[in-house]
Amino acid sequence: MELLIASAIGALTAAGIYLVLRLRTFPVILGTSLLSYAVNVFLFATGRLVVDQPPILRDDVTSYTDPLPQALVLTAIVISFGMTAVVVIIALGAYLSGNDDHVDDQPGLFSDDGDDADSEMGSDYAGGGKTTTTEGSA
Image (cartoon, rainbow, N blue to C red; front, top):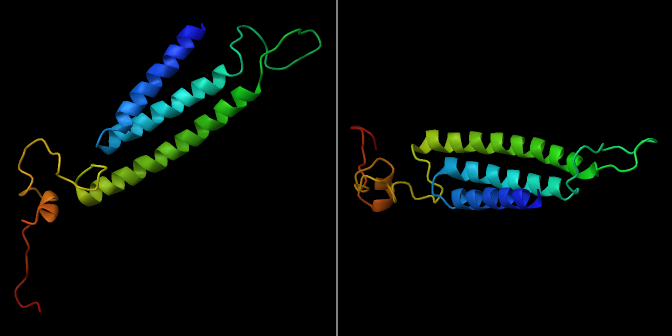
């Protein structure tokens, strides 16, 4: 059981770190979610994995599981859900305002089409951007 939990924590952490290092916002959000899941499983495992034991000590119970990690994980789930919702809204706003979801603040730098100088957002950074002026404006 401990090997399974340790492997799950390792897989979640590895996948989370891989996704956090991507250059798009959606994989970064998924990566932080996977990292928070890995931390939650780790916190839950710190309470000693015991099967069929109650979390509260009563008169007729001789052994019980620690309820503190369960409370910590429940709190962490609520906090991570709220933070994920906030980050998704911020990323959506950044995408809608800039038409790009890169996290490196240089949109169009790593685009797949190879034509960065003529792209809408990449032209601002490449120096070859098109400017439009209206006649009669000073």
